Amino acid sequence: MAALTTSRIEELQLYDTHLTDSSCPHLGSGIRNNPTLRTLNLSGNNLEGPHFWDVMAALTTSRIEELQLYDTHLTDSSCPHLASGIRNNPTLRTLNLSGNNLEGPHFRDLMAALTTSRIEGLQLSSNHLTDSSCPHLVPGIRNNPTLRTLNLSGNNLGGPHFRDLMAALTTSRIEELQLSSNHLTDSSCPHLASGIKNKPDTEDTGPVYEQSGGSSFLGYDGGSDNKPDRGITIVL
Image 1 (cartoon, helix red, strand yellow):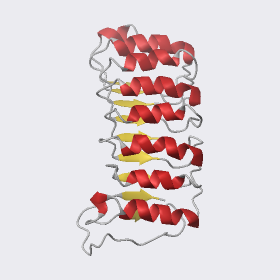
Image 2 (cartoon, rainbow, N blue to C red; image 1 turned 60 degrees about the horizontal axis):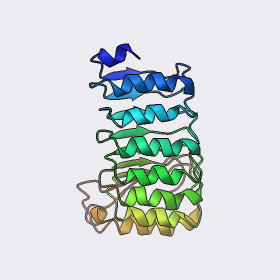
Image 3 (spheres, rainbow, N blue to C red; image 1 turned 135 degrees about the vertical axis):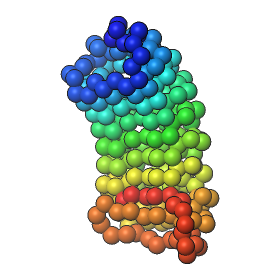
C-alpha cells in the first residue's frame, strides 16, 4: 500500500485476498494518497471491524469512481462508516455492497448519505433487508438526483412498508430496479403498479417488465403503443 501512494495505477483488484479489518489502515493510506486510482475491488475479503472506518475516511479524499465491496462481511454497524465515505466523496459513481448483512437501525445512515452523493449504480442484493428497511430506503431513492440503477434482489421486502418504497420511485430518476427473489406476493402488485404508473418518465414510453421466473404481475403500458424508448426496467 505504501507503493500505491506514488504509483499511477487506475484500477486495483484485491478480490478474495484474505484481507481483514486489520488491513484497513494500510488500505486507507494507499487510497488516500493516490491521485489516479479510479476502480477498487475489495470483494471477498473480511473487512468488518473498527478499522473499516479508515478505508471510508480515505475514500472522502480519493478520486475513486467504482468501489466493489461484495461479500466483505459488513454488518449494520458498518453503515455509519459507509455513510461518511459516500457523503463526502464527489467522484463515486458505482457502489457494490451486495452479499453483506446491512439490515438494522444504522442502515438508515447509509440511505441518508445517499441523498447527497453522486452515485448512479447501487448494488444491495442479498443483504438480509426486510420490509422494515423500506422506510430507510425511501429518502435515498427519492432525494438522489443521479441514481439510475438499484439492485435489491435476494432480500425480503414483502410487507406493508413496501408501499413506501414504490411511492418513492415515483419521484426518483431510477431507470432499472431489480427486485427478484424478494418474497413479494400478490398483495404487493397494487404498490408496484402505483409506483410505475405515477413515475413521470414512464408515462409516455411505458415501463418494461422482465422476469426471473414466475408469472408477470401486470401489463401497464403507459398509454404508448410504439414504446420507442425504455422508461424503466423492473426485474422480478
